Every structure is written in C-alpha cells, then in structure tokens.
Length: 161
Image (spheres, rainbow, N blue to C red):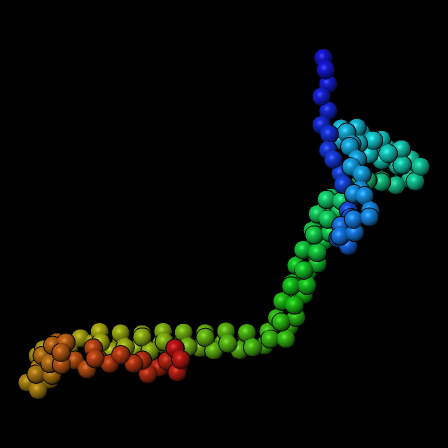
C-alpha cells in the first residue's frame, strides 16, 4: 500500500525592501513533510523533558500568536474589572444615595396612592345626606365634570419622575 504524505511549503519572511531589489534571488522554497515534522517535534519534546527536568513544549508560530492574544484578552478583562472595582469604590456613596432617594420616592408614591384609595372608598349613608351633597355626588359621577380625571400631574413625585 502506497503511503501518501501531505506536504506543505514554507517561505521565509522577506522584507519588502528586498522585493524591490532585483539583484537578490527570491528566497528558496523549503518542502517539509508535516507528518514527519509533527513526529520530530514530539520526539524533541520527549527527549528534552528528562534532560532539563521540566515539561518542555515546542510551539508553532500560530500557537504562540494564539496564546499571546489570549493573554492580552485576559489582561484587558482584568484591567476592566479593576477599573469597575475602582469606580464602585469611588462612586459607591453616590449609588447608595440615589438608591435611597429612589426608595423614598417609591415609598411616597405608595403612601399617596393608599391615601387616595382610602379616601375614595368611604361609604356615605344616604339617609344622612342632604340635597346639596347629593348634587355634588351626581357631578362626581360625571367624568367630564370630575377634576380628578383631568389632572395628569402627580404632586407627590419630585421633578424628573
């Protein structure tokens, strides 16, 4: 059975300035059998380990670039977290102040709403009502005459809410 090997061509990096200079020949093209190269790297790693007493790994250029990019991303994430922690430390008091202000507003709104509901739910005894109160009650039932339906402002909210 014939064994086929995958071959890859590597070209040395050539500075652009030498491309314009026609006196130099182009760099040679080196053919490398990738399967043999991978075996060789593995063998070198295995041989180097006992010699140097450490876990030695030979890495390709793309592996080194990928690791450098990963390390840069991790550094950026650490810096962002550090800045976020610093902002919380610097402005934490402001956050607490605004949270308390917001809680006060909610509390005031709830209290005012409960008071409004309590006042509107009062029952009136029809036997003790005089005629003038009866006329006022009739006007309140008419939404066009009811000033509560026309008032869109809420006096218990601070400006901006």
